[in-house]
Length: 230
Image 1 (cartoon, helix red, strand yellow):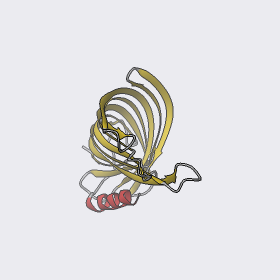
Image 2 (image 1 turned 45 degrees about the horizontal axis):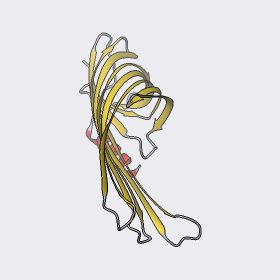
Image 3 (image 1 turned 120 degrees about the vertical axis):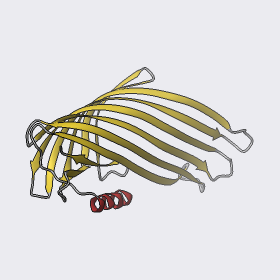
Image 4 (image 1 turned 180 degrees about the horizontal axis):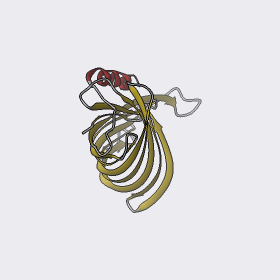
């Protein structure tokens, strides 16, 4: 969370924006998704054991999204985004009982999304506006996984490499804040949370779920963007 606030502060200080929409005008946009999460857990195998086991997890993600919008009025905008993203995740499990057991799992995910959207603006004052955005999304991604493990010091390290292909269709609601500081036609946008429904196919297995992610969750990427009104 601290990392997100630092990034957000730097972006606010370095970008200028202007929120007035012109009916019939176009609005090209560009946004970045930045995410970082790390955690460590220390626990015992059972209540009578003096051995501490260690589990560590880390995740980094990055994505960029160019887009183009058309202003239906001074409050409504209709458009399309294209997103390319990648993420790296590392999971480690080690036992400190001297047995030599460990399990390390690393993965790289790359993918793209197509997102038609409609956005409604609610002006608060001359500098700030709220927006409510609805999106339909089609996504495709490939995850490359490397798994290494050993049960004891007497065993050799076993390695498994494999890939997972996934496809998903989503409906998303994304409210956010738009910051207006300048006179050069730029808008700074910060997404607050996502609420959506997802239908996904992972290696021919179908899944359906409702999901929620917010800016205050450490594992949720911070989304920042700029928009230019023509």
